[in-house]
Image (cartoon, rainbow, N blue to C red; front, side):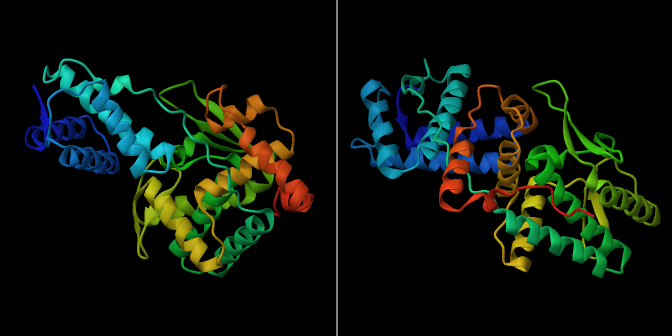
Length: 322
Protein backbone atom coordinates (compact mmCIF):
# COMPACT_ATOMS: atom_id res chain seq x y z
CA UNK A 1 0.00 0.00 0.00
CA UNK A 2 1.86 3.09 -1.26
CA UNK A 3 -0.55 5.62 0.19
CA UNK A 4 -3.31 5.87 2.74
CA UNK A 5 -6.69 7.09 1.57
CA UNK A 6 -10.17 6.33 2.79
CA UNK A 7 -10.78 4.29 -0.35
CA UNK A 8 -7.94 1.84 0.22
CA UNK A 9 -7.94 1.82 4.03
CA UNK A 10 -11.55 0.72 4.62
CA UNK A 11 -11.16 -2.81 3.10
CA UNK A 12 -8.02 -3.35 5.18
CA UNK A 13 -9.81 -2.29 8.34
CA UNK A 14 -12.55 -4.82 7.55
CA UNK A 15 -9.89 -7.54 7.11
CA UNK A 16 -8.33 -6.56 10.44
CA UNK A 17 -11.68 -6.72 12.27
CA UNK A 18 -12.51 -10.05 10.64
CA UNK A 19 -9.17 -11.55 11.71
CA UNK A 20 -9.64 -10.38 15.30
CA UNK A 21 -13.20 -11.72 15.34
CA UNK A 22 -11.81 -15.11 14.26
CA UNK A 23 -9.29 -14.90 17.12
CA UNK A 24 -12.20 -14.70 19.57
CA UNK A 25 -12.22 -10.99 20.41
CA UNK A 26 -15.44 -9.95 22.15
CA UNK A 27 -18.17 -7.98 20.41
CA UNK A 28 -17.43 -5.07 22.75
CA UNK A 29 -13.72 -5.03 21.77
CA UNK A 30 -14.60 -5.09 18.07
CA UNK A 31 -17.03 -2.21 18.60
CA UNK A 32 -14.25 -0.19 20.28
CA UNK A 33 -11.89 -0.90 17.37
CA UNK A 34 -14.53 0.33 14.92
CA UNK A 35 -15.00 3.55 16.89
CA UNK A 36 -11.22 4.09 16.97
CA UNK A 37 -11.07 3.54 13.20
CA UNK A 38 -13.81 6.14 12.74
CA UNK A 39 -11.55 8.67 14.44
CA UNK A 40 -8.59 7.75 12.20
CA UNK A 41 -10.78 7.85 9.10
CA UNK A 42 -12.01 11.30 10.09
CA UNK A 43 -8.38 12.43 10.30
CA UNK A 44 -7.73 11.05 6.81
CA UNK A 45 -10.87 12.74 5.45
CA UNK A 46 -9.78 16.10 6.88
CA UNK A 47 -6.21 15.73 5.62
CA UNK A 48 -5.46 18.54 3.12
CA UNK A 49 -4.84 16.25 0.13
CA UNK A 50 -7.41 13.58 1.20
CA UNK A 51 -4.53 11.13 0.79
CA UNK A 52 -1.44 10.44 2.87
CA UNK A 53 1.39 9.47 0.54
CA UNK A 54 3.85 8.89 3.33
CA UNK A 55 2.95 8.32 6.98
CA UNK A 56 6.20 9.97 8.02
CA UNK A 57 7.24 11.56 11.32
CA UNK A 58 5.51 14.82 10.49
CA UNK A 59 2.25 13.09 9.56
CA UNK A 60 2.40 10.95 12.67
CA UNK A 61 2.81 14.04 14.83
CA UNK A 62 -0.06 15.76 13.02
CA UNK A 63 -2.26 12.79 13.88
CA UNK A 64 -1.12 12.92 17.50
CA UNK A 65 -1.93 16.65 17.70
CA UNK A 66 -5.30 15.92 16.09
CA UNK A 67 -6.07 13.47 18.89
CA UNK A 68 -4.93 15.90 21.57
CA UNK A 69 -7.27 18.59 20.23
CA UNK A 70 -10.20 16.20 19.87
CA UNK A 71 -9.91 14.35 23.19
CA UNK A 72 -9.15 15.72 26.64
CA UNK A 73 -8.52 12.30 28.17
CA UNK A 74 -5.00 10.83 27.98
CA UNK A 75 -6.50 7.36 28.25
CA UNK A 76 -8.77 7.96 25.22
CA UNK A 77 -5.73 9.00 23.18
CA UNK A 78 -3.76 5.98 24.35
CA UNK A 79 -6.62 3.66 23.41
CA UNK A 80 -6.85 5.01 19.86
CA UNK A 81 -3.10 4.88 19.33
CA UNK A 82 -3.01 1.31 20.63
CA UNK A 83 -5.70 0.29 18.13
CA UNK A 84 -3.68 1.82 15.29
CA UNK A 85 -0.51 0.11 16.51
CA UNK A 86 -2.32 -3.22 16.29
CA UNK A 87 -3.75 -2.29 12.89
CA UNK A 88 -0.37 -1.35 11.38
CA UNK A 89 1.24 -4.45 12.91
CA UNK A 90 -1.45 -6.36 11.01
CA UNK A 91 -0.61 -4.47 7.78
CA UNK A 92 3.11 -5.16 8.19
CA UNK A 93 2.37 -8.86 8.80
CA UNK A 94 0.23 -8.97 5.61
CA UNK A 95 2.97 -7.07 3.72
CA UNK A 96 0.62 -4.19 3.03
CA UNK A 97 2.92 -1.68 4.73
CA UNK A 98 6.68 -1.61 5.26
CA UNK A 99 6.81 -0.66 8.94
CA UNK A 100 4.56 0.44 11.78
CA UNK A 101 4.62 4.27 11.84
CA UNK A 102 2.55 4.53 15.03
CA UNK A 103 5.47 3.13 17.00
CA UNK A 104 7.15 6.50 16.41
CA UNK A 105 4.69 8.04 18.88
CA UNK A 106 5.80 7.62 22.47
CA UNK A 107 3.14 6.10 24.67
CA UNK A 108 1.71 8.52 27.18
CA UNK A 109 1.55 7.19 30.75
CA UNK A 110 -1.86 5.92 31.71
CA UNK A 111 -3.78 8.46 33.72
CA UNK A 112 -4.99 7.05 37.02
CA UNK A 113 -8.27 8.63 38.04
CA UNK A 114 -8.84 9.15 41.78
CA UNK A 115 -10.93 6.40 43.40
CA UNK A 116 -14.58 7.07 44.21
CA UNK A 117 -15.41 4.29 46.69
CA UNK A 118 -18.89 3.86 48.09
CA UNK A 119 -18.85 5.47 51.53
CA UNK A 120 -19.24 3.19 54.55
CA UNK A 121 -22.81 4.20 55.50
CA UNK A 122 -23.99 3.53 51.93
CA UNK A 123 -22.18 0.17 51.81
CA UNK A 124 -24.11 -0.86 54.91
CA UNK A 125 -27.48 0.46 53.68
CA UNK A 126 -27.27 -1.43 50.38
CA UNK A 127 -26.28 -4.66 52.10
CA UNK A 128 -29.16 -4.26 54.56
CA UNK A 129 -31.55 -3.78 51.61
CA UNK A 130 -30.26 -6.97 49.94
CA UNK A 131 -30.70 -9.01 53.13
CA UNK A 132 -34.29 -7.78 53.46
CA UNK A 133 -34.96 -8.88 49.88
CA UNK A 134 -33.99 -12.43 50.84
CA UNK A 135 -36.39 -12.45 53.78
CA UNK A 136 -39.28 -11.02 51.77
CA UNK A 137 -39.11 -13.46 48.83
CA UNK A 138 -41.19 -16.65 49.12
CA UNK A 139 -40.83 -18.10 45.62
CA UNK A 140 -37.74 -20.42 45.57
CA UNK A 141 -36.25 -18.92 42.39
CA UNK A 142 -36.89 -15.34 43.55
CA UNK A 143 -35.28 -16.12 46.92
CA UNK A 144 -32.32 -17.73 45.17
CA UNK A 145 -31.90 -14.65 42.97
CA UNK A 146 -32.00 -12.41 46.04
CA UNK A 147 -29.40 -14.63 47.70
CA UNK A 148 -27.24 -14.46 44.57
CA UNK A 149 -27.35 -10.67 44.55
CA UNK A 150 -26.44 -10.48 48.23
CA UNK A 151 -23.56 -12.97 47.86
CA UNK A 152 -22.33 -11.16 44.73
CA UNK A 153 -22.32 -7.83 46.58
CA UNK A 154 -20.57 -9.30 49.64
CA UNK A 155 -17.97 -11.05 47.44
CA UNK A 156 -16.96 -7.82 45.74
CA UNK A 157 -16.88 -5.88 49.00
CA UNK A 158 -14.99 -8.54 50.97
CA UNK A 159 -12.71 -10.01 48.28
CA UNK A 160 -12.26 -6.94 46.07
CA UNK A 161 -12.89 -8.89 42.86
CA UNK A 162 -13.65 -7.17 39.60
CA UNK A 163 -16.23 -8.44 37.14
CA UNK A 164 -13.85 -10.51 34.97
CA UNK A 165 -12.87 -13.17 37.57
CA UNK A 166 -16.39 -13.15 39.04
CA UNK A 167 -17.83 -14.06 35.63
CA UNK A 168 -15.59 -17.16 35.56
CA UNK A 169 -16.00 -18.19 39.20
CA UNK A 170 -16.94 -21.86 39.76
CA UNK A 171 -18.44 -23.53 42.82
CA UNK A 172 -15.20 -25.42 43.43
CA UNK A 173 -13.37 -22.07 43.61
CA UNK A 174 -15.34 -21.01 46.71
CA UNK A 175 -14.32 -22.75 49.93
CA UNK A 176 -16.68 -22.08 52.84
CA UNK A 177 -15.52 -22.82 56.41
CA UNK A 178 -16.95 -21.60 59.71
CA UNK A 179 -14.02 -19.29 60.40
CA UNK A 180 -13.17 -18.14 56.89
CA UNK A 181 -14.23 -18.17 53.25
CA UNK A 182 -11.57 -18.41 50.56
CA UNK A 183 -11.94 -17.53 46.89
CA UNK A 184 -9.50 -19.25 44.54
CA UNK A 185 -8.71 -17.15 41.47
CA UNK A 186 -7.29 -18.96 38.45
CA UNK A 187 -5.56 -16.82 35.82
CA UNK A 188 -3.89 -17.66 32.52
CA UNK A 189 -1.24 -15.00 33.24
CA UNK A 190 -0.17 -16.16 36.71
CA UNK A 191 -0.43 -18.98 39.22
CA UNK A 192 -3.76 -19.38 41.07
CA UNK A 193 -4.06 -17.31 44.22
CA UNK A 194 -6.49 -17.13 47.14
CA UNK A 195 -8.41 -14.16 48.53
CA UNK A 196 -9.68 -14.53 52.12
CA UNK A 197 -13.13 -13.37 53.27
CA UNK A 198 -14.71 -13.13 56.70
CA UNK A 199 -16.24 -16.28 58.15
CA UNK A 200 -19.23 -14.15 59.22
CA UNK A 201 -20.49 -14.68 55.67
CA UNK A 202 -20.50 -18.48 56.02
CA UNK A 203 -24.22 -18.72 56.83
CA UNK A 204 -25.40 -16.70 53.86
CA UNK A 205 -22.97 -18.44 51.48
CA UNK A 206 -24.12 -21.84 52.72
CA UNK A 207 -27.77 -20.83 52.35
CA UNK A 208 -27.08 -19.68 48.80
CA UNK A 209 -25.30 -22.90 47.81
CA UNK A 210 -28.02 -25.09 49.34
CA UNK A 211 -30.83 -23.13 47.64
CA UNK A 212 -28.94 -23.16 44.35
CA UNK A 213 -28.58 -26.96 44.54
CA UNK A 214 -32.32 -27.33 45.23
CA UNK A 215 -33.41 -25.13 42.32
CA UNK A 216 -30.94 -26.76 39.95
CA UNK A 217 -32.33 -30.15 40.96
CA UNK A 218 -35.94 -29.00 40.47
CA UNK A 219 -35.14 -27.60 37.03
CA UNK A 220 -32.90 -30.57 36.11
CA UNK A 221 -29.89 -28.36 35.51
CA UNK A 222 -26.19 -28.90 35.99
CA UNK A 223 -23.42 -26.32 35.60
CA UNK A 224 -20.12 -25.66 37.41
CA UNK A 225 -20.38 -21.87 37.74
CA UNK A 226 -20.88 -20.27 41.15
CA UNK A 227 -23.30 -17.63 39.91
CA UNK A 228 -26.08 -17.90 37.32
CA UNK A 229 -28.28 -15.90 34.96
CA UNK A 230 -32.06 -16.27 35.23
CA UNK A 231 -35.35 -14.67 34.27
CA UNK A 232 -38.49 -14.60 36.46
CA UNK A 233 -39.30 -18.22 35.66
CA UNK A 234 -36.12 -20.27 35.37
CA UNK A 235 -32.34 -20.32 35.39
CA UNK A 236 -31.19 -19.65 31.83
CA UNK A 237 -27.56 -20.65 32.25
CA UNK A 238 -24.67 -20.88 34.67
CA UNK A 239 -22.34 -17.92 35.02
CA UNK A 240 -22.82 -14.16 34.99
CA UNK A 241 -21.30 -12.01 32.24
CA UNK A 242 -19.55 -8.76 33.20
CA UNK A 243 -22.45 -6.89 31.57
CA UNK A 244 -24.93 -9.00 33.56
CA UNK A 245 -23.16 -8.06 36.80
CA UNK A 246 -23.27 -4.37 35.84
CA UNK A 247 -27.00 -4.68 35.13
CA UNK A 248 -27.64 -6.18 38.58
CA UNK A 249 -25.86 -3.23 40.19
CA UNK A 250 -27.83 -0.75 38.10
CA UNK A 251 -31.05 -2.24 39.46
CA UNK A 252 -29.69 -2.15 43.01
CA UNK A 253 -28.75 1.51 42.59
CA UNK A 254 -32.19 2.33 41.24
CA UNK A 255 -34.02 0.52 44.06
CA UNK A 256 -31.88 1.98 46.86
CA UNK A 257 -31.26 5.41 45.36
CA UNK A 258 -27.57 4.85 46.15
CA UNK A 259 -25.06 4.96 43.31
CA UNK A 260 -23.03 1.77 43.58
CA UNK A 261 -21.14 -0.10 40.86
CA UNK A 262 -18.86 -3.16 40.97
CA UNK A 263 -15.90 -0.80 40.47
CA UNK A 264 -16.76 1.63 43.28
CA UNK A 265 -17.59 -1.23 45.67
CA UNK A 266 -14.25 -2.89 44.85
CA UNK A 267 -12.59 0.45 45.63
CA UNK A 268 -14.33 0.45 49.02
CA UNK A 269 -12.76 -2.93 49.70
CA UNK A 270 -9.28 -1.66 48.78
CA UNK A 271 -9.71 1.36 51.06
CA UNK A 272 -10.87 -0.95 53.86
CA UNK A 273 -7.76 -3.14 53.45
CA UNK A 274 -5.52 -0.07 53.67
CA UNK A 275 -7.38 1.33 56.68
CA UNK A 276 -6.96 -2.08 58.35
CA UNK A 277 -3.22 -1.82 57.54
CA UNK A 278 -3.05 -4.95 55.42
CA UNK A 279 0.38 -5.22 53.73
CA UNK A 280 0.58 -3.53 50.33
CA UNK A 281 1.98 -6.74 48.83
CA UNK A 282 -1.06 -8.73 50.02
CA UNK A 283 -3.49 -6.10 48.73
CA UNK A 284 -1.87 -6.11 45.29
CA UNK A 285 -1.96 -9.91 45.19
CA UNK A 286 -5.67 -9.96 46.12
CA UNK A 287 -6.36 -7.26 43.51
CA UNK A 288 -4.62 -9.37 40.89
CA UNK A 289 -2.26 -6.55 39.87
CA UNK A 290 1.50 -6.40 39.36
CA UNK A 291 3.82 -5.65 42.32
CA UNK A 292 4.70 -2.36 40.57
CA UNK A 293 1.07 -1.18 40.79
CA UNK A 294 0.77 2.00 42.88
CA UNK A 295 -1.72 2.33 45.72
CA UNK A 296 -0.88 6.01 46.20
CA UNK A 297 -4.23 7.17 44.80
CA UNK A 298 -6.03 5.22 47.51
CA UNK A 299 -3.67 6.41 50.24
CA UNK A 300 -4.22 10.01 49.14
CA UNK A 301 -7.98 9.45 49.24
CA UNK A 302 -7.76 8.12 52.80
CA UNK A 303 -5.61 11.04 53.94
CA UNK A 304 -7.90 13.66 52.38
CA UNK A 305 -11.06 12.08 53.81
CA UNK A 306 -9.56 11.84 57.30
CA UNK A 307 -8.78 15.54 57.12
CA UNK A 308 -12.06 16.68 55.55
CA UNK A 309 -14.70 14.21 56.75
CA UNK A 310 -13.33 12.61 59.87
CA UNK A 311 -12.42 8.95 60.50
CA UNK A 312 -16.04 7.70 60.64
CA UNK A 313 -16.39 7.90 56.85
CA UNK A 314 -13.55 5.36 56.61
CA UNK A 315 -14.99 2.93 59.15
CA UNK A 316 -14.98 0.06 56.64
CA UNK A 317 -15.27 -2.55 59.35
CA UNK A 318 -17.02 -5.86 58.70
CA UNK A 319 -20.72 -5.33 58.20
CA UNK A 320 -23.35 -7.11 60.24
CA UNK A 321 -23.40 -10.16 57.98
CA UNK A 322 -25.46 -12.29 60.33
